[in-house]
Amino acid sequence: MRGSTRAASTPVMARAPLVASRRRASTPASASRRGCRVPTSATATSLGLDLEAPGWSGGYGTGGKVWSSAAVLTRWLGANAPALGLEGASVLELGSGTGAVGLAAAAMGATRVVLTDGGSESLLKLAKDNAARNRAPGGSIDPSCDIRVARYRWGDGKMPAAVADAAPFDLVVGSDCTYSVGGHGPLCDVIREVLAAAAHENARVVLGHQHRCGAAMLAGRGSAGWGVDPHLDMFAKTAAAKGLVVEEVHRESLAWHGLRNVSVVSVELEKQLEKQLAPSKTNATGDVGDAGANGAVAAAAALAVTLFSLALPAAARQYSDYDPKQFDEFLPGINSVELSLAQPNVCSKDAFKAMDRARDMYEIGQLDEAEGALSSVLNGTCGGPNPTDADKVAKAATWKLLGDVRVDSYRWNDAIDAYNSSLEDMPAGTSAPGALFGRANAKEGLKDYAGAVEDYGKCLELRPNGPDAATPRFERAQALKQLGRWEEAIVDYDAAADAFTANRQKREAKIAEAQAAFAKFESGDVPSATARLETLARQLYSSDVRAALAATYWRAGDAAKAEDTWLDLCQIEDAQCGKYTDKEWLMSYRKWTPGLADAMQDFLKLRS
Image 1 (cartoon, rainbow, N blue to C red):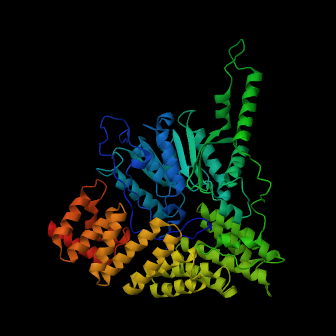
Image 2: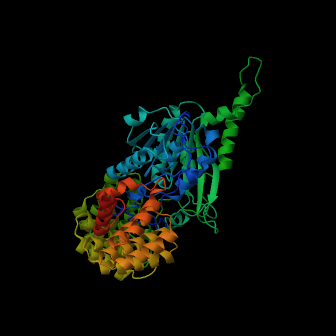
Image 3: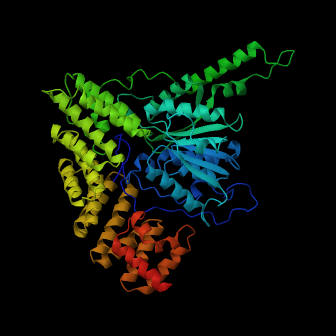
C-alpha cells in the first residue's frame, strides 16, 4: 500500500522491486583520514550509496522516495564540501525520509550524522536499515561513523533527547521540507533552536526546495515566476518573522522547459548575518559605532528583500482562499476536474479550508490533528440535511481525504468506512476514482486481495486510459500477484509499463517490466521470463535484474550461464551478493515472486 498523495503534480510509484545501484569508487577510504570519508575524487553522483526507496507503499508516505531536491542538494554539498567544513562535521538532517542526504554527508566526511523524521515507524526503520547497509564492511560509509536515527515531529515542543544529546551541529540539511505551507512555522522554530545551540557561529542550514508550480496553481496560490512556485517566498516570509534570513544559493533546472526547478537555500539567524555584514570601520574605542551597527542591520534587511520577494505575487491569492475547482488537489493519482461548483455554501467553503489545513498537518506527520480537522467539518456544517450538489462534492472529497489519513495510520477498517461514505455521496464524481483506489489500498492492508483487485478495476473503469491509469494498473497487478493469478498480472504489468513509458516515467516502466518477467517465471514460461530479463539487463545497470537472470538460467537447466552471470554480478562492489540467501529480504524489499526466490535459494545452496 502507499501513503496518500497530496499534490496532483507529485509523481507516485507505489512499489519499487528494484533498487538501481551505482558503482562505488574503487579506492578504499584512507584509515588515517578523519571521519567517514570516501576518496576525495568521489562526487555526489559516485558515492555508491545503496538506498532502499520503496516509494509510497508500506506506510512510508512521501518519505519513502528520494525526490529530485535530495539529488540536487547532495550534488551541491559535494561541490561545496570544503567550504562547508563537511569533513569531520556533525550533521543533522531534518525530514530525512530514506536518509539520502544525511548519508551522503556521511560518505563525504561527516563524523556524526543524525537522521530525523516525524513519519511512521516503518519510515524510521527504513532510514536505520539504509544507514546500517551503507556502514557495513565494503559500504560507502566508514563503519566508525556515528549515525543515529530519531523521531522529530516539528511543533511538538522541545528538541527530542536523542537529538539534543548529539548536539551541537555544524551543518543542518533538509530536502523537500518547505513544500508544505503549514509546516513553515514549526520548521523555522526548529531551525532557530538548532542554530542557537550550534557548534559555532558559522554553522549552516541548507535546504533543497523543489518548485511544484502545478500544485501551487491548483491550490490557488499563483506563481512567483516561470518555474518558481510561491511556497519558497512564503517560507522566507515566515522565516523573516522569526528572525531568520533565507538566501537562495543555487538553482538547478531539471528540464529544458524550465518548469522542473530545484533551489538550494541557506538559512541563518538574522543576528549571524548582521555580524557577518558589520563594517570593519571602528571608533576610537575599537567598538563598532552606532552608524556601523545600524548599517549592518539595514544591509541585512536589504539583502533579505533582494534575495526574495517576500510579498505574494500580485496574481496569487492567499493560500487559504476558497476556490471550489481545486478539490482535485486532494485526489491522489486521479487528476481530472469534472465539475465546477456554483454558489458554494458554508459547508463547501468550510470543507475546502478543512482539507487545506488537514493536508498540511498530514504532511508533517500530525495524523490525529488532520483527522480532527476533517471530522469537525463532517460533523458540523456539512452534516446537515438536504445537501446541495456543492455539499455532496465537498463531503465526498473530505471523506476521501479522511480515508487517506486513516490508511497512513494503518486503520484499515476505519479507512474503508471513510471511503464508503465518500462513494455514497458521489459514487461516480471527481472523488470516486481516488476513493476506490484508496479503498483498494486499505483492503490490501487487510490482505483482502480479491477485494482490492475489484476496487482497482472499478477505479480503472472510471479512468481507463491516460496518465492516471498507470499506477492503478500496476497496483492491481501487485494484488493479482498475491492471489497467484499470474496471467492476469502479466497483462496489467505490461499495460502499466506502456502507460508509464507514455508518461515518461522510465524507472517505473522498467519496474513494471521486471515484475512482468517475474510473473512470467511463476506462470511456467521460463524462456519468456529469461528473454525479458536479458533485455532488461542490457538496458539497465541493476544488480537485481542480473541476480534474477542467474536464477532463471539455473531453473532452465543452464548451470554454466547461471554461474557466469552470478560471478560477473558479484564482481560489482555494491551487488550485495551475500543478501540473496535471505528469502524474506528478496520478497519484502526486492519484491521477488516466491518461485523465483526459491530458485535463487536452490542455486546458491548447490553452488556452496
